[in-house]
Amino acid sequence: MFPAVAAALVGDLATDNDAVRLARSGTPVRQITTGTVCHLDADMVGKALEGWNLADLDLLFIENVGNLECPSSYDLGENLRVVLMSVTEGEDKPLKYPTISNTADLAVITKFDLAEVVEFDWQAAKRNINAVRPGMDVIAVSSKTGNGIDDWLERLVSSPHKS
Ligand SMILES: Nc1nc2c(ncn2[C@@H]2O[C@H](COP(=O)(O)OP(=O)(O)OP(=O)(O)O)[C@@H](O)[C@H]2O)c(=O)[nH]1
Ligand SMILES: [Mg+2]
Image 1 (cartoon, rainbow, N blue to C red):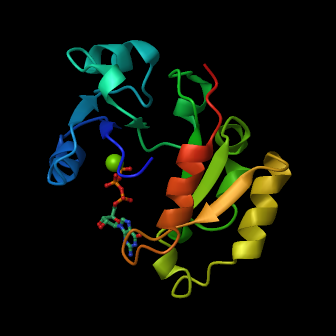
Image 2 (tube, rainbow, N blue to C red; image 1 turned 90 degrees about the horizontal axis):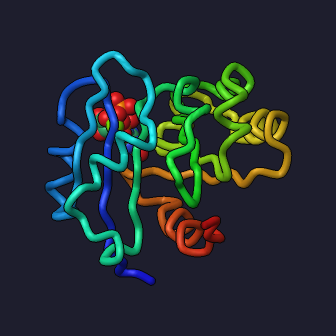
């Protein structure tokens, strides 16, 4: 599967900063800006994909607006729904925002290189995620060090296709 052909849509209320950053990798990327809306919907995704031949892609990443509540009630047609929480946000985010964890297939704890500095409790985080979504897989990654990225890619390619 790897190297795979990937593309990305990134969602924010304003700016194309994320698209500009990701485009440096050479990967096709488009920014969706929502103005005052705190989530993406399927129509926004459909419009952003215009002109791309999806048959040419192995993976399409859709980064929703970075809000742990609003995006949870919208189906974007994704095969794998992933909730990302960084170590700096604390272990109890899953308890405070249960719906997003409860609608996800996989939880990814990000910025794990900072875990020690912020005294992040990995076992507590897993317990909290499992309290709202029993049995959900939880993995840890750091994009700074690359730790966990192989595991993350493995989950992506081995996840069952829903459609
Ligand atoms: N230490 C560390 N910093 C990271 C890591 N990943 C991203 N960052 C930094 O965190 C900051 C915010 O980036 P991200 O959290 O990835 O998110 P973003 O897409 O810019 O944020 P949104 O506004 O939610 O779209 C940037 O300064 C990144 O360089 C990581 O694994 N470790
Ligand atoms: Mg972003």
